[in-house]
Image (tube, rainbow, N blue to C red; front, top):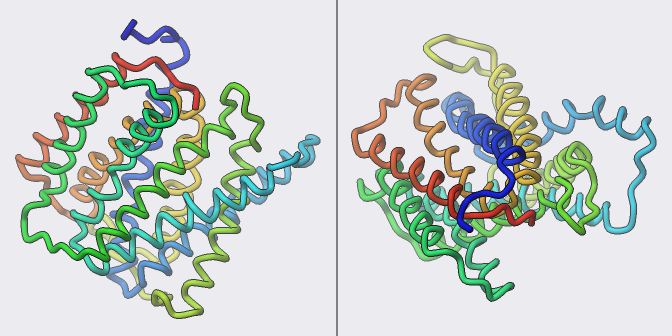
Length: 314
C-alpha cells in the first residue's frame, strides 16, 4: 500500500524534480552577486521575471503556431499564476527578509509542503500515512539545521506574517502547476503558456510594487563577482532568468505532473540543499557540519515520503 504503484512514471519525475530543485537552488547565489553589485531584491525579481518572459517568446509563438488556443479559465489561470506563485512569492519573501534574518524567512517559506499536506488533509479528510507525517517532521528538522536558524535569528511578527504569505504562494505554485501538468480532470494551459504568461503578469506586478514605493526598485550596471571571476551584470541576469527561473519552473511543472503536487513539494525541499552547495561553489560560503547533517535529514525525508505516498495527481 505504501509503495509507489507507478514507478515508471515517478522515477523520471524524481529526476526532473531534483533538476528543478537544482535550478531553483542556484537562484540565491546568482542573485547574491547582483545584490552585492547594488541591485535591490525587487530589481532582481524583475530581472528574473522579465528575462523569463523574453526567453519564452519564441517557444510561446511555436505553441500558438501549432494551433493551441486558450479555453475558458486559461487566461485566469495564467493571471493567478503570475500574481501568486511568481510575483507574490518573491515580493512576500523579500518583505520577510526586510524584517527577519534570511534563515528564518526561508524556513518559514519552506513550510509550504507541510501547508499543502495540511490543506489536502482538511479538504479530503484523508489522514496522511504515519510515515508521511514523520517525513514532514524530518524535513522541517533538516531545514532548521541546513539554514542554521538558531544563529542570531531575529523574529518580528509582521515579518513572520510575510513569510507565511510567501509559504502560501509557494504552496500555490505546486498546486496550480498541476493544472498545466495534465492532472486528471484538470484542463489547464501548457506549462510554457503558464510560465511565459505568468512571467509577464508577474513583471507588471513587481513594477507596480516598485512604482508605488512598497519596495525599492534599483539596478546598476556595475560588474558582478561570480565563482571568483568578474562578469558583466547581464550575465547574472541571464543566469538567474534562464536557469533559475525558466528552466526551474518548467521542470517543476513537469515534475508535478508525474509526482503530484504533494510529493513534488517535498522533493522541492532539495532546493535548499542545492542553494547551500551553490553558495559554497559560487560565493565561497562553506556549509557547516550542522548543514550537512540537515541535508541528510531532508534527503531521508524525501525518500521516506516517496516510499509512503502514492502520487496524488493534484
